[in-house]
Length: 178
Image 1 (tube, rainbow, N blue to C red):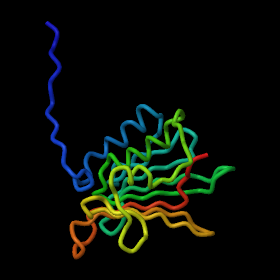
Image 2: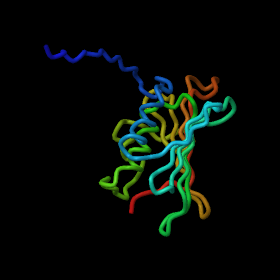
Image 3: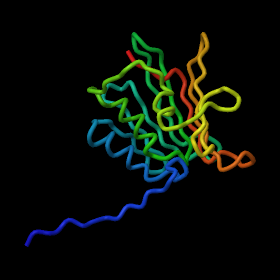
Image 4: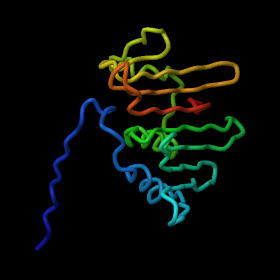
């Protein structure tokens, strides 16, 4: 007799950016199994290190009470400088997976458009200080800073103006469209 698939109820938390970190396997398993990233193993260390098949990208998940738990480093390429992105322990894994999915999808249709456009379409508004955008609930702030020597992104989620961040993410020289 064939086994009937089990139905799993899923409760979504809204707004999503306040849901917490989630299961790191949402990021690590697809990279390893579907994309061929290799892993380093040290049973005495509470960390995960994955390397891309071409050895140009390295993802590290390492619990650090004072820093970012996730870091993604990418080596210099002839047409792009080296870059990195980092994410705090409570950054939703769907956000991190979105970054790694874009990195590993060779069929991705990259368009050089305004990176703020999807947020504006989702009703984010300009920040009061005119630096970046704020989510509709006012809890998340995204900022893009460009200078002659830097191209950085920051995202921070807080519960209130007096509380510290729930999670933070940052990147330096992250690639944009072709």
